[in-house]
Image (cartoon, rainbow, N blue to C red; front, top):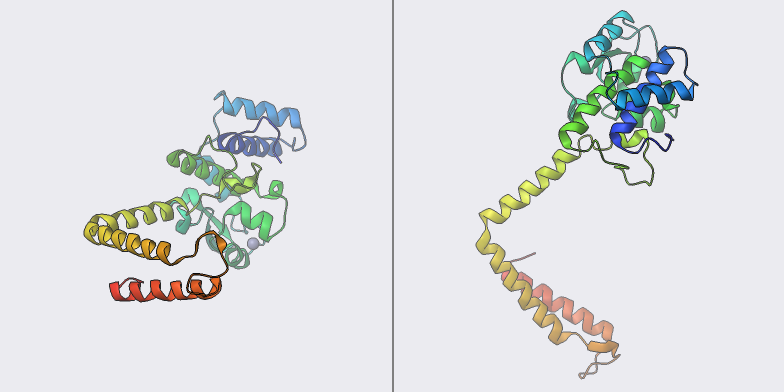
Length: 243
Ligand SMILES: [Zn+2]
């Protein structure tokens, strides 16, 4: 769990990056150093190394698997899956072994590492997390979620919030666009079905027994009346051609 000073997605990305700097410097457990780097990143006093440097780092470490260090890193993995909005560029590529590639599939890096592999997020190799953080920063920036907190709604801001939006927004936008398109194309039928709904509602009102009386005037039990009313609504809907 990040310290209280880490309040937003932007903070969390800088905090994770500060931890990478500390790890690189051999000061992994040095909280003071981590917070010093965190504040410097947040205030813009230091900029994180650009992706070209991350790429060089990846090339220098050779072809072993970037995730598990197995010497057979002959597959390529997109750190942020293309299907989830990751770019198809060298910035997003690492060489990995077949097993890790298949295991990660199109999952978010943190989700895969923490929830599937059940490992500490602090043990994600530096080159992988470095690339991920910069890419995810750009994605949150473009979506206006850098100042968000707890995107997955579980009550805490954790690393799992960083990738939570991946592949989600476009689906939601698509859904809204689809329903708007439907409404625009078919205003008449919308008005028509609205009339039908009112018609059905009025029948429902007239048929339902109010106040929870056990017997209706006709002597039916409430359960029977409900069944009767449902049947009636079904018949009307069928006649009007709506499902
Ligand atoms: Zn591997």
